[in-house]
Image (tube, rainbow, N blue to C red; front, top):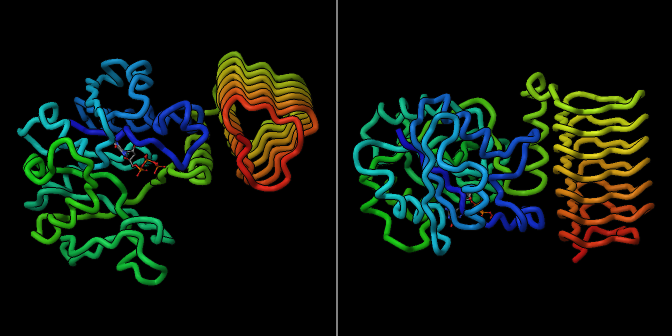
Length: 364
Ligand code: GTP
């Protein structure tokens, strides 16, 4: 069976980190989100994956080439963004007309069993089956109204508080029959959720099922940090092993954490809980990193504190620096000694920050 992964979005809500890498290559627990997805697809006996790419397409080709976890990888390249429906039509020849196929939004982390999803789809005579996930607040998402036998009656996108037909949201995982190709125009930006699924629902050709397990989209910085926390807690054992890490005495590691290869941590530093430290990161003395993601090759100097923040690749953080909740520091940024970045400050890539920033703003 084949799976299409929608991987071409610009990830504007994750800027500035998405200015230098596509969203699907953001590490979660030190491993790109797409690696987790490919591993899960391979477990579900998928043989071929089509990556629908556009923004920074070469980054995918460079990392994965033509195979991953025993599956064949194809790239369907867009010359303009085609949304969530257009890429399916664009990949028609690669997908073929022989059997149903999976479509995934690439920016979600989930433990869903894809083989089960396909089984559910085969229970009905449907053009498409969508997977639903129960959330507390559905107002940011697309919700659905269902009959008792799981047929979708209608979609309600981003419902107002109290007006959602249910707390079940579209999880961005679909099984689709090739007859869908006739409903999507070629070379046009099309939203599958807004333009195609409502038509199928009206024709009683759309079914939906909810699933349990983990699901989170990494669309915004707080979601991304949340996904990292979730993964660190669930994959605690696997992530504890590290290669080449050197730790001085009195270093406190407060699990769950993920520590990459060749990380150096000097004395009296405390890492965790919920910290992911990428490969080759150097952590000085008396540093505290908690609930944060540090991309590879960053340097964090003595007595600095980073809590609830994301630090980009190769960033150099000086001594006695304080970086607070929801701060995002772009790649190769330099933060000078004694600087405080208060909650919600964003620093663009390669900037030098010499003075404290004490109100939430973007340093450009
Ligand atoms: P924002 O700009 O922050 O909204 O992010 P995004 O561009 O990724 O959009 P969104 O979160 O709505 O995308 C959902 C999924 O569809 C993600 O996996 C995107 O990579 C993918 N996607 C969005 N637009 C396109 C597109 O034009 N082409 C392809 N191939 N995939 C897309």
